[in-house]
Length: 226
Image (tube, rainbow, N blue to C red):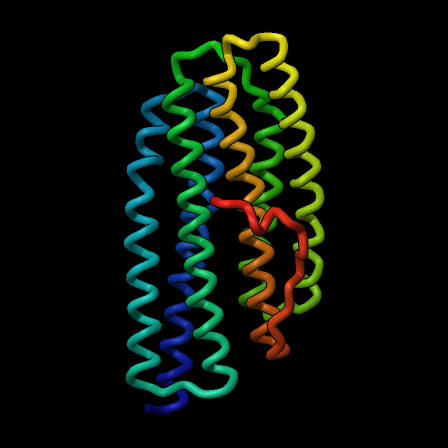
């Protein structure tokens, strides 16, 4: 297999990975918007669209495995392909988080439970901005960005804490809303985990450029069951 052909194949996989990233990013934003508008039809559509993300993930994974089997990539090419195999899994999980938010939007569509949507929207915007820039850093092999972006996870965590406190206060004041209010906790959990997944993507960028596997975020939330 020629060097040119291998480069072409890697570029094709990268393009498909970026498309998957775009689908996951938009799914998060759309799910939060459906929650904001209490739009059950939009939420159902996002829930159903997760299948497209899953199918794209499996197609890319299969493409990478075929390259492994037929072209025997070595050294840097091997690192790139291995990293993309990990990244598409992170993106598929982000799609799952969007699906989870859409499910909450469906449950709360006809409910009057107050939702701190401004803070939730800010959290979603921050997490998806991190994702968008991380994928750009992957293409550019931007090591500085790969180190910098995970630091922004602290801002997402602070938003999580702010919203969590507001939700708990509402539970105390209105205990009859606890069941529905708990659903909102799931939304912010998913957004917080989205930012954690971006950190994992940045670790793969460092791996590609430097060959080192480093943990860029040692926070305990990585141990949460998601």
